[in-house]
Image (tube, rainbow, N blue to C red):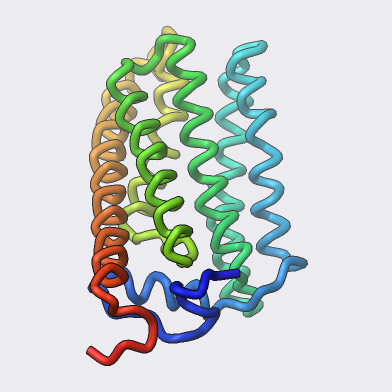
Length: 223
């Protein structure tokens, strides 16, 4: 449900630069729950505690990497199925990025506790999630749903989901660890930079919406 000063479902949205299509695309999605893509997204979410236990309990890194690989495959598959079967939904548009962020944050916490990644990476990525959570509250205050994930954020997430398994496998001895280490760190640095940049773009979108609302250019305003 949206507040009186926000957009109604499917209604017009103020044109505030790049933020406009992000809101309308999600609002046009059907409001349904029982779909195959949503089931895959829930399966990914259920894998998060198993993934953390494998990393912090027995430290079974290879099994943890397997869980992460399955998560990445189902992330790709649920998007494909949503398009092939025409089963896109508002819930799916929320579950998909939520699962990505949970895996990223849980992996960061585990790798930090095991002293595999330096603190500055944890501060940047977790801090980005905290700032975006505040931005989401601002959107809710004005009656807007969460904005659709930017393609840059998707690319950054993909890089990080490749980087973290590499860091786990590189934390050891042998030729494989030696081979993987430089590639894993390159993906980590690029993924972190793009992830923070995508967060800045999201904040710019939110700022545009807030400025339009304060200027009285709400839904239906002719500009």
